Image 1 (cartoon, helix red, strand yellow):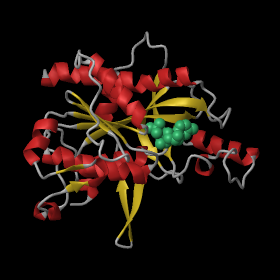
Image 2 (tube, protein in one colour):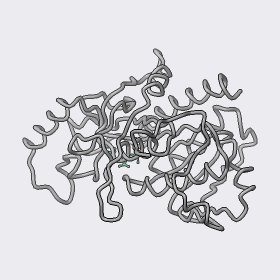
Image 3 (cartoon, protein in one colour):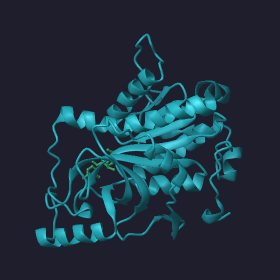
Length: 308
Ligand SMILES: O=P(O)(O)O[C@H]1O[C@H](CO)[C@@H](O)[C@H]1O
Ligand SMILES: O=c1cc[nH]c(=O)[nH]1
């Protein structure tokens, strides 16, 4: 089956597109410190998961699980959330009712590793109708800092919407296709009385935070302010609203796995005006909550409508 034939269907169990998996006596999900030696336990612990929310930083994803617990009226005793991946310091995995909160680190290689293991976890736990979200931060292009951008198209540094990998010495390209219905539903979770705007737009996904994002303040830079601003204009010409480092791989992997997925990122600065992130920590924490709020509203609506 090629990737174009891999139609996303919300009513199917989470599949693993690997025939070799069946022959493993125990599958070690090495980077999240879980394994299949007691597969029933995985089903008991994770079988009810419907939403997996990924974000770069472990502490943000720990904060998110607290937030979603409060929003869903769970964990009223205020217990510390359990990190199911505590056996490793690579990633964290927390759970609040039907929501898994997972850190992915920085960049597509880091995201891809935990994505593989979470898809397998969902498969072994016999989860169904699962939706994945990336809840992140980004640099805006001509967008008011603190805005939330819903990615309606993800492109790489050459404006291609294909996520490229090298497998057995060959270049493999997988398209990042956005689920338009999901984006529309998320957009509808924005409210008139929100103190921030939610916009849809194209996201540029880069391999690096500094040179690849046209920053003049990295350790390396072979271009000047004029070159940078010419590139920023090119980004505007391509309707790019924000830049981050995982959306392309995330959406392509969702598509390849047959899982509905969307990316919502807050913008921390306007790259037309500055390179350095100057927002103070309390404000950063508030802004980081904004995409979480949208996703939480979506989850609550869905739980009410479909799973309630
Ligand atoms: O805030 P997160 O989710 O980590 O996302 C963004 O922030 C990191 C760079 O600072 C990159 O991972 C980028 O994609
Ligand atoms: O400018 C930014 C801000 C957050 N994350 C990025 O990748 N770039």
